[in-house]
Image (tube, rainbow over all chains, first blue to last red):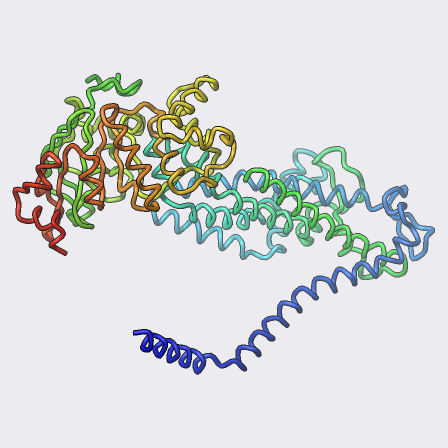
Length: 302
Length: 270
């Protein structure tokens, strides 16, 4: 008995050896490792490059980047280089877009999940996927010829924080909705049945149990959407008016960090060029800070 | 029993009179022509091989069948003389009131992703216990009733997902009995648990005798033998599940009337 067992196990080991080409494994492992390294290195290289290029402005201007009397840049330090209005502009547009988009996206997903018509559910998902595929310049064009004149009737000039936020909200809606949708679909059916078996109303089950279980997916969608809204350039360039100012109302035009870079990079030189790289560095920092705080929020609910 | 009374509390004699009950899923027959009497305060075990309609039978008793697409029922289930399969209970509010009276425990423990206390208090809040202190009091009593209080009293605020499988299942039972139901339906409540946790839950079920009417679906014949007052064997001959035999537990196991019963409880078939 003992003998036959050990025989069998050694035969098994032999087969395993023959079927595992150790050389191939090593090469594959090396390749995968290299690719991972490349992906991580790319990010580091980009950040390092942007940081190096901003070095000149940070050294020459320091805190003046936030305290100067305005944005009248030049190639040397005689210009004015205050980036604060652009930071405020970027944040306001992105956060307002999120505030508009998140409730609509989540509510639409909840509707689909409580809806029993399969064709309607499929139509909704296809529509959201399509919405995600529309290029931002098309959104911008639509915003420029539809939203901006409409807001202009309320209060001139129409190009404003609100215009940018409305168009961006539409753009990030599919991102949030698709992630929230898949997170809700992943919630085990037993939880729903368990809630209904206690006599909870269907809406209570959706809001208090299923949505809670899916929250990490909803938060992930919100982070991605916020990142996209902060980084979006074309739309804000077209509908936000590009006036450098600290706004006092959401009906006023502003310039975002992204628009600032896109508008001036073509002809900037010297300190102005370097200050634009500072804009880029700030943008990266903003996105990282927002992602970090969103993660913390997500943990708080866990 | 008055239907309006059921909506507010479960003032009823918790005996079930089931007659001619059938369940279909689309064209497929899951269960046909089951007639059975369940006494108030007793434990009834439903046994039989997989696919014999045990779970479908259980789902009829608190209208969980409404939640499955294309599922239809025929026949009557009378709770204290009122047919709960009637159209009056189709309305969500009435169905919710019914499910408060007729609680259900599932095979896999399914605590909500909330704290231990909230798992119990959520249902209480839904059913009109607005006072926070009263909710906590009822939750405490329910946890004591399932023997979980000693284990969790210092971590009521922690998420219920940190509990072990057996503790989770007892929490689910506490969650149901906190609503002061009259009947508890249990769908293989021990089959996903390890032997020790399973034994603990089984002991709890035995303790519920008298206070609640329990209908227990189980694959574990020994368990049915140990806890049930009455046992029913379901069988699917290939065209839908049927009730083969129902009798007092000792009678069904020791002096079965039907040949199938004798073979099944003797472990001679399948």
